[in-house]
Length: 484
Image 1 (cartoon, one colour):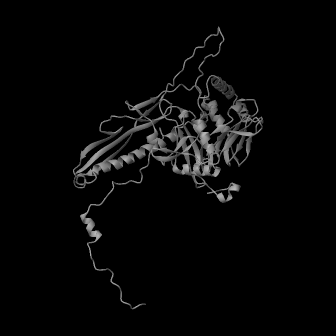
Image 2: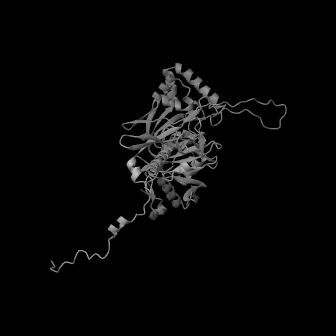
Image 3: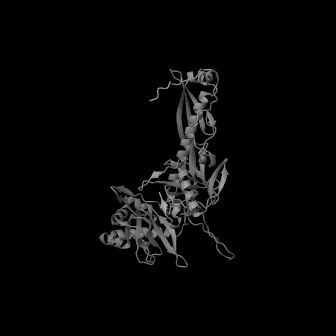
């Protein structure tokens, strides 16, 4: 150890220190910053409709034939099941009475299947209905040159083959699994056995089927009654008479309230009000939180949120998990009438960018409100962290990508609010002084009224099962491998 003398720990002070001097100077400061503030693109891009009555009614034409809905699948200790009444989600079974439905449900058989198994082969004389309990299957048809063409991709809760049960024609499609999974099946042979056990059910079953086929012949692909008309140059032809019926139970949207009470002690607002007004800053930050919650509600609310408002026919699944250009093209076919923008989690957009890079087709970028935003086929991909990422069975995250058409004139999606409410500080947002308590604390009630409406089913579509955790291994590009 050295015995050299130690240097002094500090030199002689020759000036006032900055630590002391700053007590005589004002610091340059910012207003309070908040990490949770986002651009809230959805709120900016939505057209807003003034709802003076507090309720917004969406009138539609009458649906004569029920649309297909997904069947709810329940899992108990890993075993799939469904409630018998869920079969009425299938249009063919919608008019069946409860006795027939209950007996049909008992005849369904749960089967396990592996990857690449063929459930139905085109041309086979097998009449079956399948309900997907878990996994994915693809429906294929032969093209003009003999190639396999995919016409549908089905996942949990979806079904196919229901009309084959009442048809004598051989199957026109091939059904093949693309993931391991399980499904419920019911064949025409099982139904014949049911009739042998309960002969009285046969007549009721056939009557319901005939009623379904009759209604189906009088409606369009949306379930609306055909408009009778003629076209051509023929003379002495009687002009048909027609009318358009309306739904007798139109959907109504009530404005929802988001509220909180902001409390500020008068001592704070009296003594510490420069250079920033304390009440204004408390209000500003709270309003930011209210608007963040508003956008979350527009995405996730179970009554009117976009994720819960999409028609089952407007929901599709990714082919391989990762969001590919093909998947977004399929989504565009669902909202092909003037699509406005996609909404996706930033990680989903990044996953789509990786797929585009892998294929050598980088998506173009446009400037939106001064920010560069990716587009696909000219439609912006708007980032939104309110679309949640859920953990799947593999431990990776899956999410959804939403596509919307907007505007009343376009029969799209609109935001609802009411301007001019008492105490308004911005459209449909009010602030009211509730008074002072005995401790000198002032309370301010903040209220935001809003909602969201989807005017027609084809104004909204969702790409489901979007995997965000895949990364390509470019060192083995020729092999086409992926890494997590």
